[in-house]
Length: 324
Image (cartoon, rainbow, N blue to C red; front, side, top):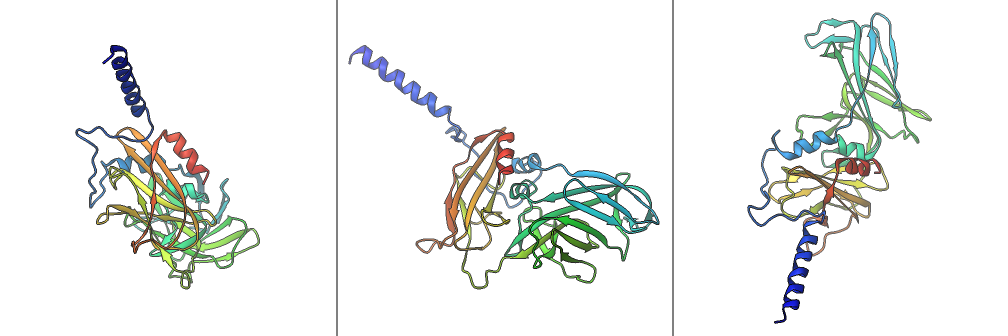
């Protein structure tokens, strides 16, 4: 064979190989290969925990004076909170007075709900939210609680308001499957909708949701599965289904038996985006794909959405989530 032809073929092969290694799509080496195992328990040393921590939003912080007088705190995030007189106690039930530190958070953007891992799901039901709120109190670094019989007043701005909204409270007992619980104490926790804001009376701290349950009693539902390469597992990846026409985000916890990320039942005919974020070694990956919830074909148990995450910087991922 002509030496020039041989050299040309060799050079072309090198170029093709070089191009394949420059791609942003994760292509593992054959040996030893990526870890494709799914684990029954996610531990603090796994990349997915580092990923979640890197996405967290900072809380707004301020302080308020607790005394025999009521105190009002206005925040730059659309919340006003009125603290009744002598409203706080320590974890041991001892009255707390003086300056306390207050942490606030208001999640209105669907991307922020992903960042904080706070999907809008109530058991197997989907919520439509007017906003997810967070309030935590501390006295010199130690937790401060509301005294028995005390209710905070919260005025929360959101337009348009909906009189059908109710209160839900965050269940944080399972970090792998955060859930919103319905308010079962309407005497001490209730909400009214004004023309421009919601007025909330509550004896509950930490996560509060102003939401209504998506009515699916007369609408068929479908579960969505993220179709991913096998090296995206529950040890390094998170997934969510984001609704385009309403403020709803469905979590997609990793299903160990199916080795897939699965949503709860979602109403058919809704435009959504399935979002997948992963951390492999020192690199971040982002994938998202639009779809319309529909009946699975060929008797499949769920609607499969194919996603191919690509390498992104963390700021690029945060910018994308900010656009949702």
